[in-house]
Amino acid sequence: DSGVTQTPKHLITATGQRVTLRCSPRSGDLSVYWYQQSLDQGLQFLIQYYNGEERAKGNILERFSAQQFPDLHSELNLSSLELGDSALYFCASSGDSGGGETQYFGPGTRLLVL
Amino acid sequence: AQKITQTQPGMFVQEKEAVTLDCTYDTSDPSYGLFWYKQPSSGEMIFLIYQGSYDQQNATEGRYSLNFQKARKSANLVISASQLGDSAMYFCAMREGLEANNLFFGTGTRLTVIP
Image 1 (tube, rainbow over the protein chains, first blue to last red):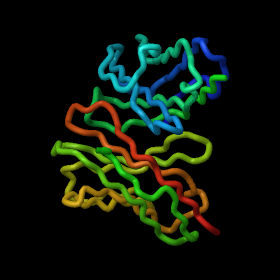
Image 2 (cartoon, rainbow over the protein chains, first blue to last red; image 1 turned 90 degrees about the horizontal axis):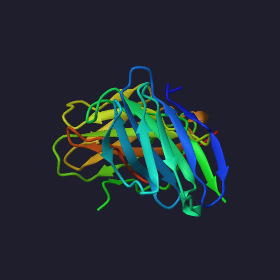
Image 3 (cartoon, chains in turn red, purple; image 1 turned 60 degrees about the vertical axis):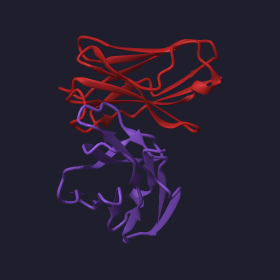
Image 4 (cartoon, one colour; image 1 turned 90 degrees about the vertical axis):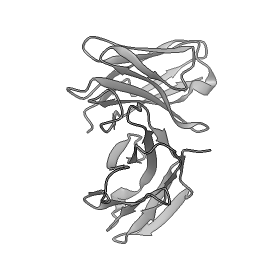
């Protein structure tokens, strides 16, 4: 158990809908990272938050957004969902703002868009 | 160019034998970190081992060791005394630079341990 929690574990929804994925980092970790794992794109970095502030952006679509709350949990919002958004979404956390510590991954949220 | 290349889509190993999973990387930054993660069929990503670009010695963690050859830009994972529970996908990843925030992942190698 990495100490990173993600809810829900599975999510099935329809095209055009909006969903929210939730992540709680390891105790004491200030950074939260979101990754997407899909069959065609592999594992891709989406976005990072550090202590409530956006720190880095990767291949995140404009339909997607994230935030980190004062208690350090983070939410990834996916809107106007398309079939191609079906993927495993991981949250990871680390203690630093980047370049230092190991990122520990949560169990992931498996999203299926029908 | 791909930052991380894993050329072995699948590997088989006999139980109790050692196996090497290949990983090559591409960066011009002198500061970087290399990671290996394990992804069992259940889906979670489990951190295994880390090697920093300035580390003088190869990293080891229990049955896992990293064969780091800087000049060849390779960071192969060696699993000794394979167990049935080692059957999983294995991903090599790199973090570039001192202030880097994200990991670049390879395409993974599926390891199957045969009893």
